[in-house]
Image 1 (spheres, helix red, strand yellow):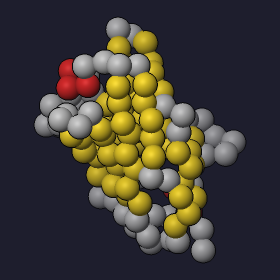
Image 2 (cartoon, helix red, strand yellow):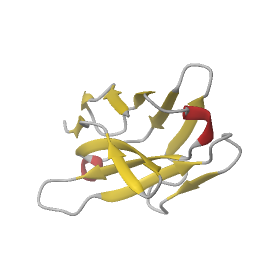
Image 3 (cartoon, one colour):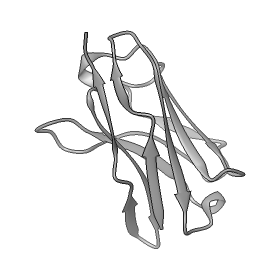
Image 4 (cartoon, helix red, strand yellow):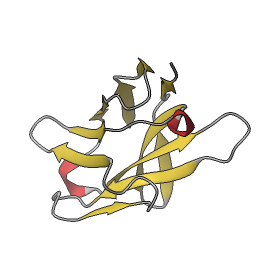
Length: 115
């Protein structure tokens, strides 16, 4: 299993970023995927998740309306569109898949929201 995140960077408050996670080593279309983040000195937290067919999404309340999770099962990718970014969104963002009760994580991509 390999998960590779990309798309992070430095953005001003109110700006947007689109993160992408490229998956390989498993049958991507059969598994739900999720995005998580970890800010300095804080626990890693769930941001959003999406079912295997992309038909249902879940968002943590503080991200609802600003973030959109989506997936492309033909390309084995899951994305997180982040709009109206705030300084408190600064964190390392990770994608995750759970296969047979084991968690698999990518290496993460840094998102910094600052003026």
